[in-house]
Length: 523
Image 1 (cartoon, rainbow, N blue to C red):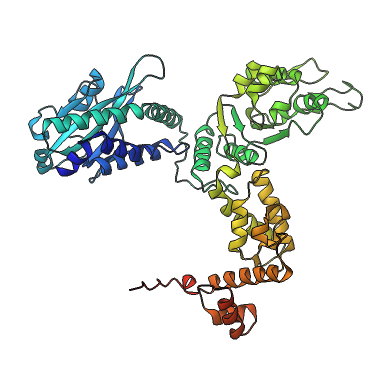
Image 2 (image 1 turned 180 degrees about the vertical axis):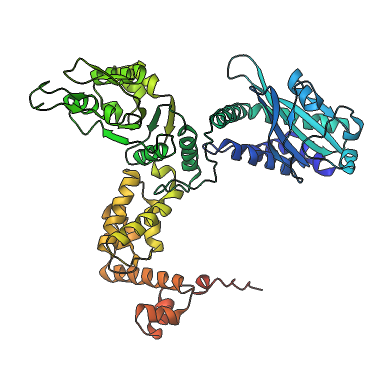
């Protein structure tokens, strides 16, 4: 087999293949998607007919086929530890090589229904996936591959290579095992988390991989009563995610109460959270229910929880642990059943070291942390978000704006967005208010987004050059819309065809690139 010999003849070929395979383990990607891509790359690079991963299900005490890349459809299969080749690999923690499938009496052929021809012409490798992250060694499952029959020394090199891959993915497999256990637990309670292909919640735009991971985590934790801690910079959408988690929970028909802890003076936050008795302090002219009472049987969202005073933190901790509160100035203990979602843009770990945040409360609210990345770290979301806001504001203000021009899109995607999604929303609203056309253009955007090059406002640019820049932008945008039809562009821009033709030549615009026609090759 020339392909195998080329790959296994020296370290350079193997290392190159390994780099390509491990690129599929993209940080922030869903684990099943990431490992599935790795199996596909492993099959392609090493010439394996099929490659699959089985993971131990601790509750069922059996190995389950979890991920596979195969030319034939897999059949749902489980393996008993110690039985068959895969079961023996898991039981012993040692790899097994089968030189020819038809000659191995203990090969079970469970998952893929291999034909007799395949059994005659395929070898089989299976290596253990071993984790060391919990202290000591734990066999999590087995990584296995079908490959064409070949000499023993070649099979040994493939076995060594497969062991390296298994070691490198052990931590990801451990995380996937934990996700499978959580999924099974939720199924047992009749609360199955939505899959990755489920649409995002209403008004939640998520095109990037990192935000799909955030949504997946939200869906996983929503059916439980676990406390959630949303972390990320201001304006990233923590409140919107809290709403999505509440809507996906069994409490969705109960109230979702919100409080921004930074919006009130510290002396008023306690009264807002826990209520107060009449006469408890100056101005307390009547008894008031706190938000914990109002949110009873529902969800309470505490934004910027890092701003709470230490006294208020102690009372929140008691409400979480004992499910009891006392109104300010009151002696009666009130029972409350509230699901808590907290959010902060601060580094709580630093606050802990400075004594600004209680350690016991931190561990109570940090049950299920979700990190929302900044907008500059997920630029794939900028255009979908901008278009979403454009549609909403155009409808609200009665504008017939259809789209955003290409130069304006470039400005939006180049900007670093320190204010995140909130700043983008405000920017689009401003542009809609200013725009009197059907297209948002660069000059409708705030000056903070516009560089000297993109907005033609550099100090070395004359008036004539600035006008030429603007003309060129309008012309290119129109030609894109008409797919290079200069006559239609002339009608749209309400000028003569002669002027359009003159400007195209003046600015050396290649009209053919807008028509979709392939350029002719020079002979």
